[in-house]
Length: 462
Ligand SMILES: Cc1cc2nc3c(=O)[nH]c(=O)nc-3n(C[C@H](O)[C@H](O)[C@H](O)COP(=O)(O)OP(=O)(O)OC[C@H]3O[C@@H](n4cnc5c(N)ncnc54)[C@H](O)[C@@H]3O)c2cc1C
Image 1 (cartoon, rainbow, N blue to C red):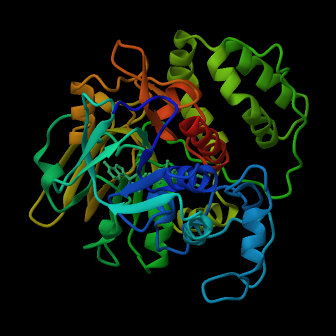
Image 2 (cartoon, protein in one colour):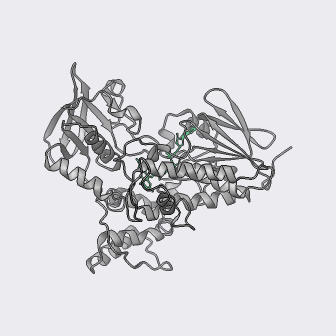
Image 3 (spheres, rainbow, N blue to C red):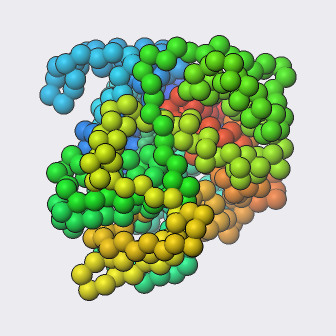
């Protein structure tokens, strides 16, 4: 029997990071009797994903606890959950809403939210937690779809949510290099074995100087590393720290007359900061308007933003915890972390080390670094058509997905409804989180994801 729009009997969510887990939580709370929900995660346990799966206690949230509730309509939920655990092993002795807590604790929180939703779901709603990797989806003549997992298992579904997070980054030099296959190169910096093989006194090169680079630096320090960490990025920009106690800035943008060009936006921002606003608070005050602003920009304006503003926006908008900034400043002052602006020219292995040559920004000067390992922290790529994973290759080949005009994510509506390749909206495929960057811009942090998750769950059951 063909599945109709109104009877999603089996909803499959693929990806058990924050996004997928919260979609499932809302489905478990609201699905009508007879609904079956499955969650497929290739790297269990569910609820952690890349960000909150870390075991390093020095990896802190970059958002204060007060803003990390899983539920937008219960802003104190995370802080209350924490208050019930203060003093326990691995938890702080006291907690304040302005604290930047270990990301591992946040993973515990999401896992607990998930466990509670499962425990409270009615027996009439069935749930399956599936450990596996999705590699393909095919549409069936019956009107539903069949999901294929890497180990050969299949699953039939009426609706599918892609909650797959970000893609790994580009290669630091964008051509094939034997170096990338050697033991001295780490392409995906979130893997647990990222620091294996680095001696305490050996030097390391991190390509990138953003949030993930900071993670690596503080983790090395925590492990007692004494060598020099070189961090190379194109412009040498680094994320700014939060300043605790900064009062919120009143909204200065008018929701009914938002700027429609990047130039107008930057003009208003600069004027507001000149008129005495703390730049952090001014930047933060734009956030509630970010989706409307982005959608009010034409694709040409969005491209302009990406070309001229994005690198600066990222380091001002995505700030780091003050403790992390203090650690990095201490290491930089001691000469144990060195930041460079420049572009990598070559990477090769010698019999005893890795040798990296970069050109200093704005000069012809070449600098050679000899290090034990090169770790790629260039930030996630966004172009799905260039990522060689069977799932994306298959979905693109079947015309089930397309990238947005700037290849920032999937071509989708702000509500996460996915467009097929030149064939209108899919009635069964949805996305949440990072894949919606092209249409929403701000779509990767918990404050956005929790709202998307709730709305998407309602849309799936509509
Ligand atoms: C290092 C880091 C730190 C961050 N810190 C913060 C922070 O402090 N505050 C904040 O608000 N945001 C932070 N973020 C943003 C973060 O991306 C979001 O908060 C959130 O974790 C995103 O969750 P997600 O589920 O969309 O993606 P992910 O966490 O990446 O989860 C996607 C999941 O999908 C699974 N998956 C992928 N492909 C397949 C497949 N084919 N089959 C099956 N499973 C698959 C993956 O294994 C993964 O578990 C951070 C991000 C990173 C990377």
